[in-house]
Image (cartoon, rainbow, N blue to C red):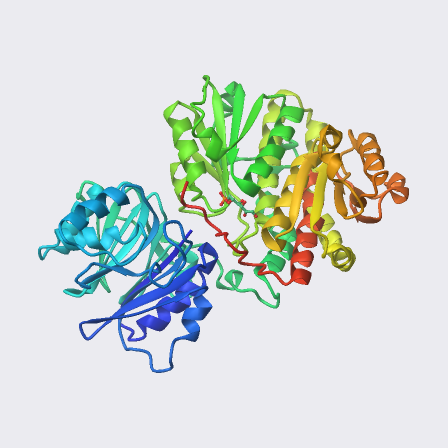
Length: 609
Ligand code: F6R
């Protein structure tokens, strides 16, 4: 949700560096993009509506030489995506400039106060109050002005700013929005996601909790939210540079779909014991006794992470017999939840920055729950604030539609289930069988991907239809929700997900020969039931695509098309069924010519609640 990139250092090509860095962040928002560089005491700024590519196209070969610049790619919240509303923003003297990610909740009051003092605003954004307020407080000491202004701002934000009178420093602030500083040789990089400066340096520090840093080419001076100087330790990033390129794939989404045999293996690596038939989750930092005491689990997430959470709930209740409550974070945080003793919360977020999930997690922590994060990004807010985190180890997920993160989340939830179940209800033999099923997954995923041509053929056949139902029962219902979400977000097709048994309670009225039903039929317990549901829909001329395990002969006379997936245990079949659903959505989107990696109106990381 908005991407920030900044540079200060020995090289004179700051503009190129920040625009290149921004390109790696444009999945965070792509309504407009802009940069500003300081050159010979003057600000040189360019802003464009649309993606960073538009900004890049406007750059000439003779770029202004500068060794300090900041850039921004915007996901619009306040104000339309126009050039005027694009960042960077300036104070009314054009002395200082700011890029901002987040929302300033009290922007109206600040704007009104400043306008009364005669300050003139140029945009409709909440962000513009930041440079205007700092400019208003500035009396020669920039850090002091920033500290004073930040004290007045309400909301969540990451800010980078530059002032004409201080040409050798950038000032950064991070409150509840991510900001990473990369430390190079006589140069520093600032980015919303650390991987954006990975080609330059792997040495990083993260700012958070209202920390402020004054960044010069060779030094970082950091302060906490009370202006007390602090020491920030750097860490080494553990990401490969090649993992952030598309390689030979036309889209990140396709690359990430194909990475799943590897990402699933990574999620499993050293996290189970064949011998004891259990999961080894040392990262939880909890003793057996503490785990045994857990009486109730709350799982939180948004979007795809919520769907993974729903499946985690089914797994844990089925196998470990612990009551589980699965909640959409944006609703849960306003519910005034009742937390009993011995409640464990599991917060799931690929990015680790989703504002609603972070807020819900904080609410739970205040009420005494212990929090485990399931997350893909080390150093993220979720990873820092949870009591312990299990990392997906999936590598950066760049495509806006989540794919590999979903399957890795399921692996971690399956491992948590195994750990809890083995302490309660599951025998060692059953534990070993569970592990066997888990370790077969990478090969099974590969075999699904080997038949991607068939999925593409089916997707092409139905790509022009406008109404889809995605149906499933039990473990297949959240899987259907995830499949429908993929189709909606990247192909812009109306896809409703329902538990198949609900169709006759209303939605069946919509079924006719223009309606496509994608039926997830891999749940063994409800398989006979879904066959009946599908017969009822076929009788109303609905066209049926079934995703079903090998040997599902009954479906041949019911479905118009069948995608066969390998058999596994019910708990893990959502993971295998997700693969054709992801690839189907990808192929429909490709056929319809939509923007696959950066769908309209979306952003990868939703840091506003
Ligand atoms: C869908 C998708 C979103 C995210 C959601 C939560 O493909 O990517 O629905 O799952 O915005 O994001 P995280 O997992 O980063 O909290």
